[in-house]
Amino acid sequence: MTTPKRSLLKIILLGDSGVGKTSLMNQYVYKKFRAQYKATIGADFVTKELQIDDKLLTLQIWDTAGQERFQSLGVAFYRGADCCILVFDVNVLKSFETLQVWHQDFLKQVDPSNPEKFPFVLIGNKVDVDGGNSRVVSEKTAREWCEAKGNIPYFETSAKEDYNVEDAFINCAQIALATH
Ligand code: GTP
Ligand code: MG
Image (cartoon, rainbow, N blue to C red; front, side, top):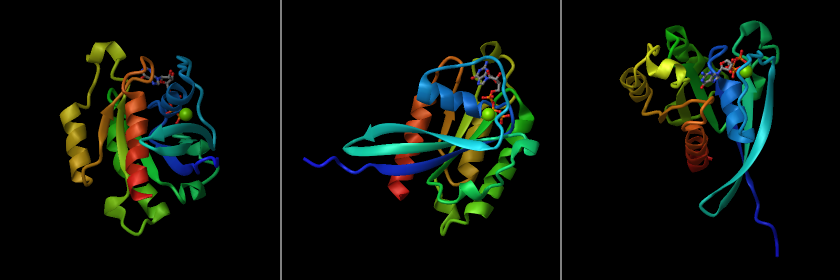
């Protein structure tokens, strides 16, 4: 019997420093959360295998540095991405406002044949903080941004409490697969 072939999907996590990109990845792949902040330097990937319907997939998840001074690799590794997950912190307005820049820069680098159709997922992370009382970006505002960008799927997550994290990554894999 032959082993069925796995499809490789390349996923890039982008967003401001401190929004929780590394934490989301660690929660999804290793089921671990660390309260202590350690800035990502450069960019690196981890892989995760999963099955969607009858398809075996390997997700190659690229975690990137939000801090400009640590973006040492440049952005060459954006190339060949199948999906881009944009992350902001629902408690930090600036991280929401900067999404525009991340979104634009990504498309400029990857230069997909059909930018309107390129699979993005938006994550509003840290919904656990202060029981939601310190959030400054509402779900409605985030959803409106997604609509304006061609109906990007939106997920509210907590990497800390493992809320909605797996759903967001699986959705990303699904839409990436659909356009792969
Ligand atoms: P850079 O690597 O600098 O780009 O940052 P990052 O986006 O990878 O952020 P990181 O995952 O390192 O998280 C930043 C801080 O926020 C850390 O102290 C995390 O423990 C914390 N954090 C991440 N996600 C959550 C969350 O869902 N809830 C809460 N309460 N804290 C979180
Ligand atoms: Mg990081």
